[in-house]
Length: 178
Image (cartoon, rainbow, N blue to C red; front, side, top):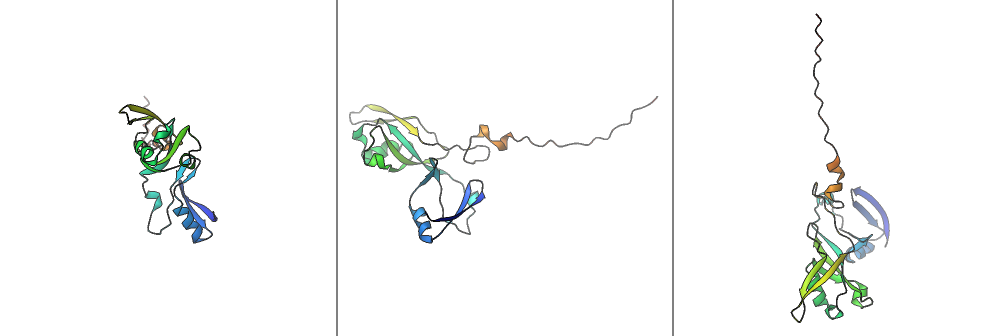
């Protein structure tokens, strides 16, 4: 991909230098990138932006709609059904070419702090409510302690740190002798 150097800027933030501006443009225009099923948020460098303080409110994630009847595999139907989870972006290649008919895989943009249902419902052409199972390749975990991404509050290292107890010096009183 023409990566020349990768430097750690801060927690979860990396600066990537490319060998050419054309390589950089290809990556930035290439759509959502993933690493270990987790989305990478890519932004061009600018001296005016503090990336460490920029809040991430939405993320693209892959969802699977298992055993969805093939008659609902049109973009309009799939996107309407998947729209109950987030804003649909695109389908994967296997879904587009109907290579695997066990599930559809759709990339949706979701809010980090939203509810992620395991079942959604839609009304079919006969007016019958259909329960549709939803599975996720990965779900964002947000920490309510400091509003970060990557872990839940229950396992937050920041919350587990005990506040330092303030030491108070008390002058010792000499024992009275009688």
